[in-house]
Image (tube, rainbow, N blue to C red):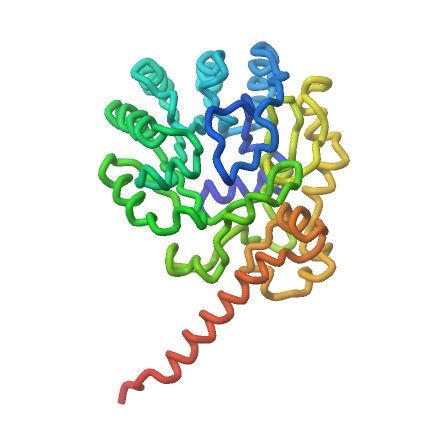
Length: 343
């Protein structure tokens, strides 16, 4: 086991929040068709001073990786002093952005931060991209922002969530990433909105379409130690919203409490909800706990709760993935049996 994997495993077992997503705002200038944010007008309730104190608290708690997210983070005017303080504290800093607002000044500031920038690039086709973002001119602006960052040797990760709307341009996005020297991550994870509204799921590709696009069907969270935490949510990861709510995961409904009312440590260590989520083990799952497919189905606790109504039950989407894995394994076994044997 690598040292990094060992750190993550131990963090999960000891409930150390080594990875935190901090949503600076829910405001956004895009209206992406699949977005999980239910209300873009939700006020940002964490003033600059509280966010800066939070960063100190996270450093004390052992956080290593910090993602500043939104909404669109550059719509919050104090993003830069927050980001600078995060780097002063030594966090591995990731900025999640739609790319629209990255002008020359923003690109210079980001270069000085030595941060990683993650940009959603849905397609290289203008019509497809703007059908998703619902913002005319957005593709050209996003590409210009990406290229400004790469001209300054900023590490850029282009993220392509797979949708029914963009499934035909995986090769195009990967080619563009290679052209500008960015990393590319193509992922099928589309979730319901934070309030449980399943509308974004209508744009999700069926599992059967994924192997051809991704090269393999093993997707989602895969617990390696079935006696340990089933996923990072609430054990080594959390999401803090722009209203100050501490969530076990950005897609799992339920708040452990608010940092507007208490210090982060008190919420993280004292919340009944967070303890409940981080304490779930395979043996607690009433159906999946005795199923051998749990090791590879990719069951997500948030999907099980939001889409199927039971935090401790199966995820129908994960069951479909497991069916694919089983079918692929069967075909592979048949092929080996039918292959000519060496004399």
